[in-house]
Image 1: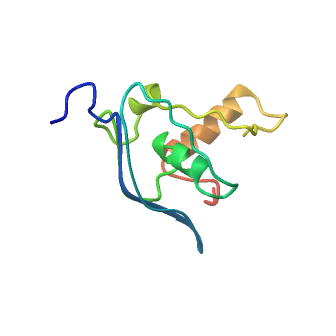
Image 2: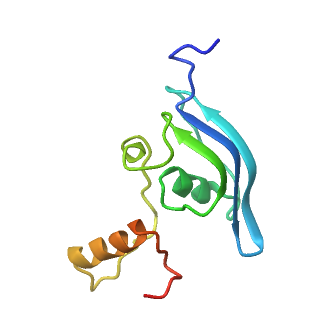
Length: 116
């Protein structure tokens, strides 16, 4: 029986993500309950950042299901899961408006490889 305290906050079922010929995540099943501290360990290229980006909604092209507090990654789930990259996404010349344009472009379903 699942109680409120043991109900998974994050549920991942059959999550698979590939980049061209490279599979970063293959059929991942994972439950995370509230109150746990989770560490993702593995060598470079093992899918840690990919998993976090999917949970945060930054990557959308994957198969399988991920639910965060019962929701697919969306604006609400960003209040639960956040991502702070090591590398700065923005060029030194960019102003705040330039950064907002990048995120608006991605919100509309485009990615960095799409032609403008």
